[in-house]
Amino acid sequence: MGDRTAYQTLTHLSLCQLRDCTRSTLDAVLELLGLLMPILREADGEVHDQLAAAEVPPFFALGWFITWFAHSVDNLQHVSRLFDLFMAAHPLMPLYVTAVVIKGARKQVLACEPDPAELHRLLTNLPVLGQLSADELCQQAASLFKQSPPSKLISTARLHFTCSTEAEAEIKDEHWHVDDQPQAPGTVPKYPLHYWKHFFTGPATRRKGVLLTMALAGSVVVTMAFAASQHQLASQLYSMAL
Image (cartoon, rainbow, N blue to C red; front, side, top):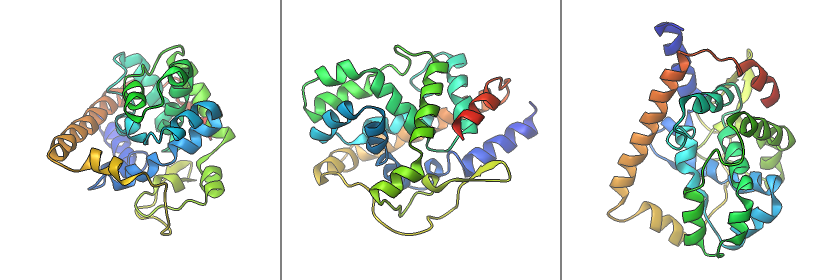
């Protein structure tokens, strides 16, 4: 794959699968994270209930989502398998992979003290590739997507988005397309105010912003490396993820 094709690939990713991650603020991404719990409910109701009862916000998945797990999976071959899926599938596929990862750790989650801080610590330190291989993780996530696509979850929960557009992605000319602006205003899942204050106010805010920017840059670097490789599973996973 030459430089021109790699550039075209990265341009498409920036305007589609990574569209909300490249906006000037994290508002759109935080909206999308609100869909994680409905997805997890479909994947494992008992684990969902444990996290919901403890009022654990989905911020633990922020790094996974904006970097496509590249900062948590050291093996480039395994990261490439995940990128195959994410490049071919709906922009919210990383949330489905996240749900499968949490489901795979159900014993630890259910055994953990029902405390938000303890559960957050557990979830942020979960190995992405635990009991499942990268291929199995992709296959289970694609199956979960087929079972409960974003459109179904959004309709059931009557959700609309004021900042993000990835949830309403659609296929046009055999490619996923994401609008620049949301189609209609509305509401998204809210979390207790003290959670927002804890994560996004105070002196640590600037440091968190720098770290998130570095994480996103790392995702782009890995994407560029991957774009130069052979995508042997892309066509197979693409048909699974539609």
